Length: 106
Image 1 (cartoon, rainbow, N blue to C red):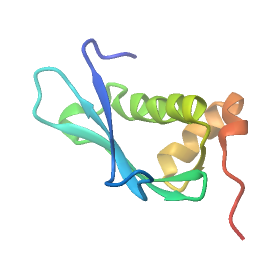
Image 2: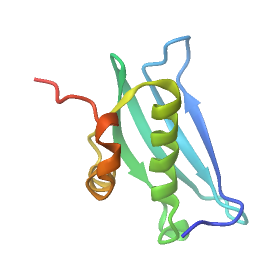
Image 3: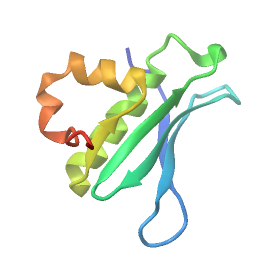
Image 4: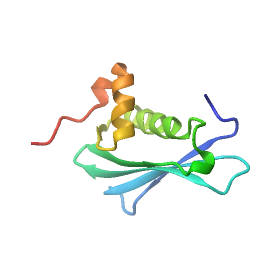
C-alpha cells in the first residue's frame, strides 16, 4: 500500500565512510517522520530500529523504509544485518533478498 507523495531520504552520518545513519520517511500533510536507523560494520549495515509514529502508522511507511534500504544495498553493494524485528520480518517475507543478508557475526 503506497502512500502518494511519500518521500524517503537517506541521511548518512558525517565523513566519507559513515558509521551510522538513517532513512527518513516524510508523509505529505504531516509533520511526523518515520525512521529506520543503521550502524555500519565492515561492508554491512546493521538495521537496528524502525520507528513510525502512530499518527502515520498503518499505511506502509515502515515497509517503504525497508525497501529504500534494500534498493541502496543493491545499488551500493552492501549487505544488511536485520537486528530490528521489523526488518527481520521483512527478510522472512522476501526470500529473494537472501543474498543481501549479512553473514551473522560470531
